[in-house]
Length: 107
Image (cartoon, rainbow, N blue to C red; front, side):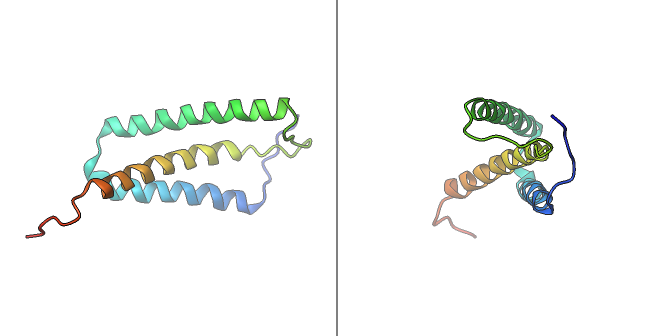
C-alpha cells in the first residue's frame, strides 16, 4: 500500500480547525490547569488514537469500509489526535461552566 500526502484541502482545514480550537480553549483555561492536566490530555489523545486504530482495523478487516490503493488518508490520524485534544478541552470548559454557581454574587 502506498502512502500519498496529497490530500483534499478540506482535510487540512479540518485538522487545523481542531488544533486551533484546542489551543484557544487551552489558553482560555490556562489559569486553572497545571502541567498534570497537559500530560492527561496527551495521554487521553494517544489512548483515543489507539482505540480509533482498533476501530479502523476491525472495520477494514470486516469490510465495513476499505481504502482504495493510493488513497489512504494519512492525515486522518493527526486529525483524530487534534479532535481528541479539542474534545477534552471542550468537556473541561463545559464542566467549569456547569460547576459555577448560577446566582453567585459578583461584588
